[in-house]
Length: 157
Image (cartoon, rainbow, N blue to C red):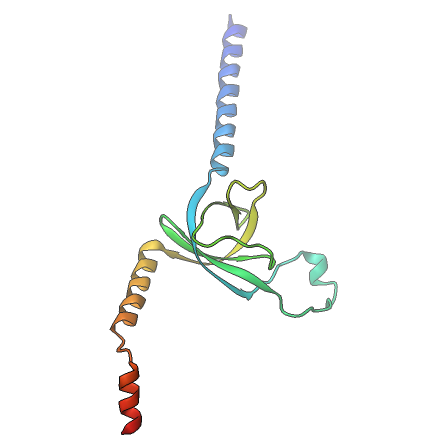
């Protein structure tokens, strides 16, 4: 009778371990959603290579490469992400799926087969970002705009 109870106990433990492993793997693959609101071309972030590259001497430096830099607005956080190369393009005003993987952001656009990997340059809470954007809009709307008539009057004086 003890063998029967031990085997039942082992089955339950194995099922529990299997369930925990599948839940953690499913959690790692869950995507969040965000909207790309801004894109500009900027300098690529430096890539940190391993030991051999660090002590291998100076490599021939090519011209400064430019990479796309995107502002991705999610539900709670706004990210500024930088692509690895100039061919990583994401459409503006498009809802993308993203997840975090190995200190990078993996972005999937329109159910693409592969994910694009981006480095995270900046992060800010969405509430703070909204306040900054409102402040910028208020500053732009309160700035007096010169019309052609005002310019003509000032030139005569």
